[in-house]
Image 1 (tube, rainbow, N blue to C red):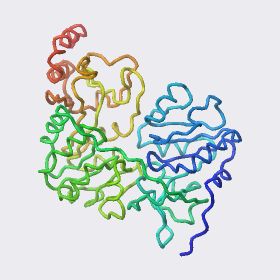
Image 2 (image 1 turned 45 degrees about the vertical axis):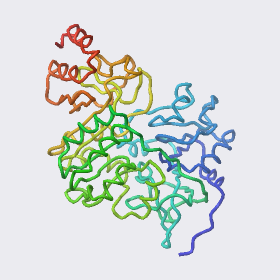
Image 3 (image 1 turned 90 degrees about the vertical axis):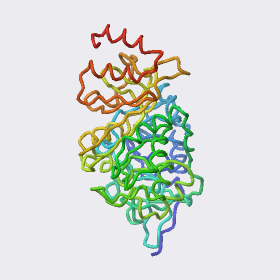
Image 4 (image 1 turned 60 degrees about the horizontal axis):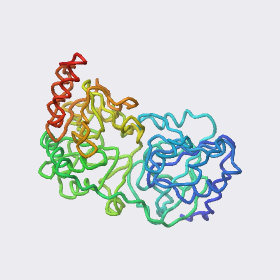
Length: 424
């Protein structure tokens, strides 16, 4: 079909009236040239709010102390938004990833989505490239202004948008942000091995980004007929798919396909996703819905945390009592795995921090910590010293199990804490 002529990125300003909520996909889904155009016009705007998870690109407006013109609302802090949040120039909304589309639809004021997309095919369809996330849930219901990035892969799933559904588009050509594959330490590899040996063949896997989830995936090479139903597609999953370890034939939902709601990794991953028929990127309110996750038999969730207390509460979004990230989909998948037939939920962490001077297993969470996976949901906690199975156990049993996987040099102090709390 004949495509209409693209405009400049500044054309997005025609869609912004006072009080407009601008929705931007996370990570590489952000249209950098469009955000730059909006940022450059900040002194002429009134009441514009940008809503985004995990921003990768810095912009001057993130640091403005003159609030009320162009403000940023984060749903998951990143290296880019963490300090602005602490200085009060960025807002943070605690939420489950699965609920973001609902929250966005309930915002007061007009809604506009601006996203980076792959070049259109000969039918006039763009794709959201490395993303589906919350933006895909809004296709066809609100205006979209898209930036066609020549380097964005064309992906499959429910993340296509036809040229007739966009209010405008521009062109750009810049590299996607790459996140190197972590190189796990010996401690992290041992944790990965402890988790991998407890995963059955035919299981469906969700794994976050990080050294320990990476290590788990590396130890799954001897498994058969695994499936992937995950929040984020990462580089280590490529080898499992290409080697035939991941087939997805025993999945109940979207069988024989690896499912994610966004992808973040290296150029190898982005090239792998281009036109890959065995991978589907689907909206987050479906992928992360615990009711959907629970339908997969032998669902396994693998997520990292920073601190676990004797009750089994996992503080995964704060460090030393200060906000670091956000809930993301950790609780979504922990709850889904809990209800899955034969499902398992693993929360993983090295037993110590700060060069071995601090125990991550604690009697009570550090003041200011936010609980991400609650005590009633937690299943298995894994450090390099073993696996503590907590689900269905009493507080006293949990305390004993967690102290047993703490670093040996902290166990005596933890026993004293448990006695003082009445848990021993």
